[in-house]
Image (tube, rainbow, N blue to C red; front, side, top):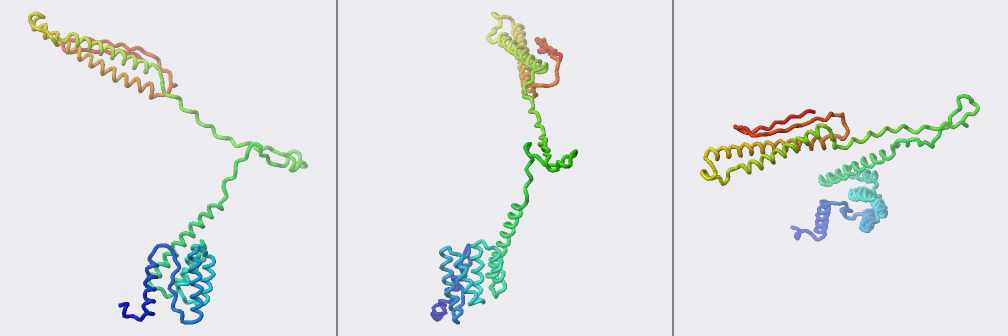
Length: 300
């Protein structure tokens, strides 16, 4: 279809397509969409625009603005010059100037995609302006006055002799600082409860070891009826060893529970505390005909 167009018209169509594609890319750029030079003023505006684009490519934004403003004076109806003035002012961080040019751009005859692009620029610049104003307002707020030091003094009239006037100096007292709370006492309390629980754990462990040894010794492992005794003796010794093993298990269980209790009473409480009277603990165990017994007796 393009091959059937005249050569001059084909160039304009390709330039328009290239500019629309450039508008969809991220980041601002100087749009080259000025109309064909039909008058001397438009031709002169075109020359200024070319200079502005060269300055823009070199990062000379002030010079680019000057050239674009001269081009706009020669061709005030060129909407692309207005848009580019907003872009370069944004590069210079002139937010108010950029907003002025973009708002002027929205009053022109625009395509839908051009209007959407201008609205996006305006929303972004208005948000940046609000953020900058909030930061400036926060910096201008007065900070808290520093507290007076003990060396600072204030000049006040003497109450008894008014003639002294401002010559009497009354020292200012420093502000009273709050007292820091005392540190908590360290853990590790040793009192009657801790000693009693530790003693109970030790005694129960010893009882468990004793009955475990007796059960191992009294167990008729190699008992042979006849040379070693009767069957009744075998049953009696087996039953005795079983009860001694039960007593050993009870002793080990009490030792474990008492040991955990002792650790909690020592490490879980502060070292200083209300006075607790010491007590005594008595542990006794023995086998019975139907099992075993473990007697615990203590006073606190």
